Image (cartoon, rainbow, N blue to C red; front, side):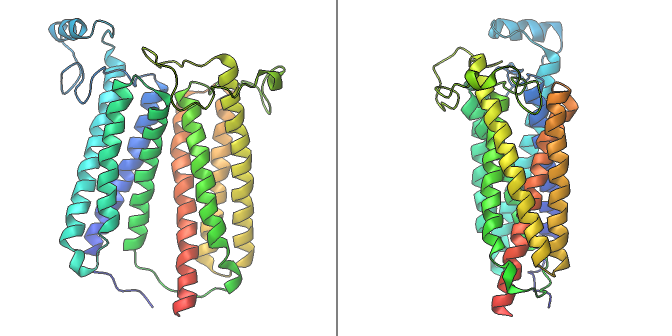
Length: 344
């Protein structure tokens, strides 16, 4: 039977769905900003050279460059950064509205803890955005900002699933153990996304330019001493990277190995679940995840083969978000299906 939902849940669901779409746009814009080297397009925060938009007139540009003599105005980069901020700020307002409505409707059964946590998270995410600028693109902050964006999207999606009417449908109990494997898959994929963020923030995406392995005698180039040091030596700016070539190669190789491990694990999970369950919804979720995984692997290979074209690199970030959402959907369906068995 269909589980009852609180009144006005449809309006809440629409708002959450709009927030999810906006969060995907923000992730894409964040990747575009990072890949166009526009992270410091505005050297201050939350304004841009002290303005709410970008310096445009000769007087504004002159005043901006006097205030920030070490950062000449580059309008294209500044606009990339500010547009990202505008969309991220809008997402914050959407989440504020979600939290307000959730508190207001808490007596009607609307989830309230998750919306309030989301509000705290997006506030911290704003702080990470500020530190990204003020700490001059320190890799750990840039990676944290990326993971914060992904986490915000995933929690919004989880909230949407919780607000969605669920129709109980039976399955065999042999599939119930795979909900734990699916949760492990979420952890593994999160680690791989973090490795991707670390690779990007350390400008290591093109440190290996051959497939399937790096160029030359790459094994002798590996250097783990400082490759994953979260707190590096102080630099005036971390823009364009501060690590040596060998350290960047190391980061890239680890990211590639992580991609292989993650792909094999998710394929095994999808095939196992698909073959064990008669539930069509869960089968479809497994199939969707494999399709998105195939697209993500193809984009990763294309990044190397075509030397990191902007559109492909941005798509690699966005599809990673969709891959995580598909895995969360599968995990949630497995969990709900198991609960239906226990409570049916």
